[in-house]
Length: 135
Image 1 (cartoon, rainbow, N blue to C red):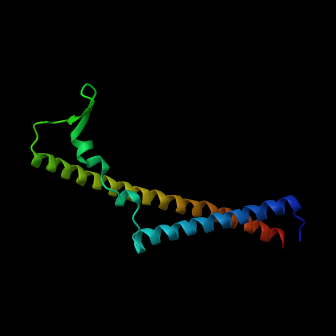
Image 2 (cartoon, one colour; image 1 turned 135 degrees about the vertical axis):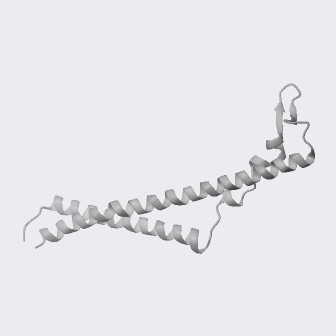
Image 3 (cartoon, helix red, strand yellow; image 1 turned 180 degrees about the vertical axis):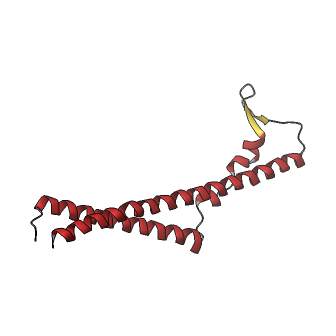
């Protein structure tokens, strides 16, 4: 049995422990993501909130500095045309939020998987060195 030295042993065990912790954190993150997204279908605030960008004040009105009040952006629109614009805006906003949510899930998935992929070889390499030093 070789005497690897106390500093080397501390380093090897330290990196191994940190790698295990990172793998545990990434596994927990992956499990949480899968449970939230595919088992319990947890909704975020962006999926539950109203479409603030599509309410009549935001979509159809603008601030007039001279009059110091909101005025119609397009005063010649009928109520049916205004309702149609609001409906189109809501459909577009819903699509944007769905796409944003999909991208958020993909980003989180990549984060957790990449953490695991980086930590696993570090752990294997350092643990192999520890076992070799103790033979």
